[in-house]
Image 1 (cartoon, rainbow over the protein chains, first blue to last red):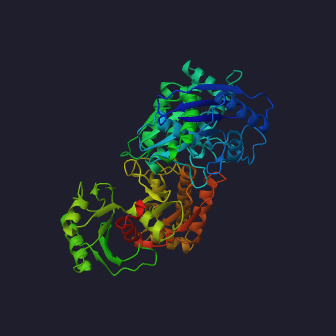
Image 2 (cartoon, chains in turn orange, cyan):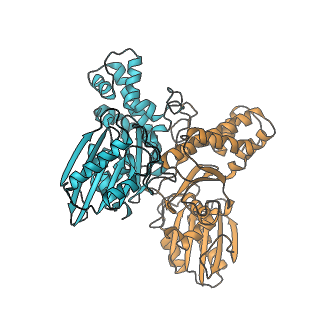
Image 3 (cartoon, each protein chain N blue to C red):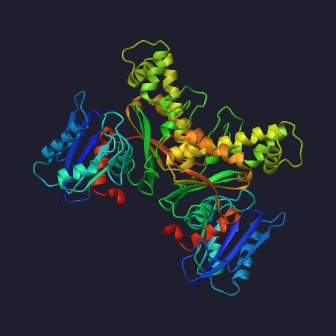
Length: 307
Length: 307
């Protein structure tokens, strides 16, 4: 009997779950226990780590884990389990998270960043089962992705692969925080679309990516234009990814993917128009939604990424 | 003692070579015999295949090959060794080249397209030795590339990966044969640069990619501008490739890479500016030059791509 503890730490919330199983985990496997907690304002690294350990112990209820898998919302060295930093919480710079948790749980611990983990989750348990290759892209506050090639994660030489958000869709477009103009993220992410709509004087408080999609659905022309431009930019990025790597499928997750049929139509149409005509791929919604990181952490803990 | 026969068929010329060795082939290994022949105008598939077999037999001189590796200038199914077509010679559609040569030489035969093969050659014997990942790009009549990821070729779900030439550098740029505007190939390939220079009324007969580079070196301002714009476009494509895949090194081959230091400087500078700042990679000239396909075919015949 194997017992896996998995954690998903995004920055403001922490999810954890336990699975006991005699078989290799699969899509129909069940969590024995599962819980989500939110960090209070002002929480720091010490608080977050204490919470991870306390929540894990509570869910384990005295059981010894076979292995622990952790999805972290920020850049990580997956080989050493060292966190480079968190984009949301101060103080995470150079944290040996793997070593800290291995000591606390007396078990092997595997840590990776959320995009690579979500790709792994969708590949083993969601919209990518049985494929040879996929590119998982989260379209949310930021836009980034994780690759599965030949049935294994491809993380890049430095672990940085998947930065579709900072490829160019429109070099004549608006300035991105990264310093370039017309990046996919600058045009297609929720906060940037909201910012562009607010800049046109469209009223709302707060204007968020969800609100842009709502207004577009209600027929507000500026919202429609900005949302379609975002879908177009993402489609250019996916078409480029196809030309470079020729993956079998694209799996899209994150809040912006709930923006309706017109958004999906524009993404697909632009990706097909951007890729060379002989390329075949499909573009589908993530199947696991917000649970993708927990499932991906399970795949990591059960070493499915090495199989 | 292993005996490898390797062939490189581009369209107008055929190179072949034989290596007998007791060790795993390496960068300092020597060819026992080697020859290059040109196809006469009007040569067709039947002629080309007859020539491959005749030249192979001549070089083998009665020896039985352990395996045969073939680089083909056109799209190939590397698993079946079926040639889809040649861009240069009529009649190659759906040719079971692997089966034909396996019968002729009574040996296992491995066939792949020239960009993937050149990547494999540079990885095992040239500018990519000892790396975990590289993207080989040929910048010539066309622009395309081959990936090595985790020490193995990544050819794509349909075998089409590496089409950097038809990613976009400048959507406001001139129309490419592929139907899009401002593709890397449209701006940076030899014939297109020559066409753009001729369109400006710069005289020469014929105007080729080499001639554009010569005129630029002599200070002709239109030639300089067109060559630098090409280098810029290629740099954008390489920066995008970095953001998507985070390879350790880019290896550039093909005639246009002989365009001088200014060209290399612009390629490198633009690639770095296009990739996110934390990305580290280098961009180096191919080490094997025109021999990369023969060496890659050797790697294929010796099954180094599976090791």
